[in-house]
Image (tube, rainbow, N blue to C red):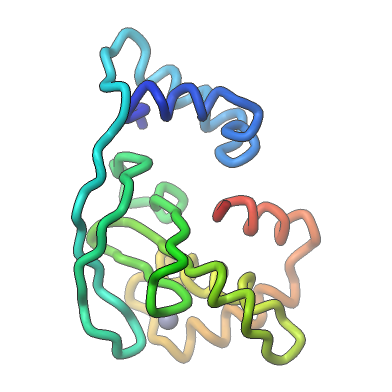
Length: 160
Ligand SMILES: [Zn+2]
């Protein structure tokens, strides 16, 4: 997957970028973009998202960070939008996972930090597009119970 702008390429090759994307991801993106001319920045783009859990679809303005290419769940574009009206949104067509961190952090239930619950929940939707809501919730609970500390940290790091 290539970088979409020079600004993104610079960020990706910084310590923060490598931490967020992983060294191998950065290497892959550098390789995919080698020799290409990129715009300095990518403009804000209007996208429409479909909200799960009974919310109405709506349009939001987001900064496009990563170009989608693959349909694989780990290639989903992940982002944070603290103005979003739900904890998390997984858009299977646009291949994006958007988390409201602020809203998720405020709610804690059953001793599980809600932010981790939101992240794992939405990533489960991405991994299993046809799984129903109830199953996703059950799987999320189970997955978090089994998650080693390192995996939890990595999950938080995917949404910074
Ligand atoms: Zn859901």
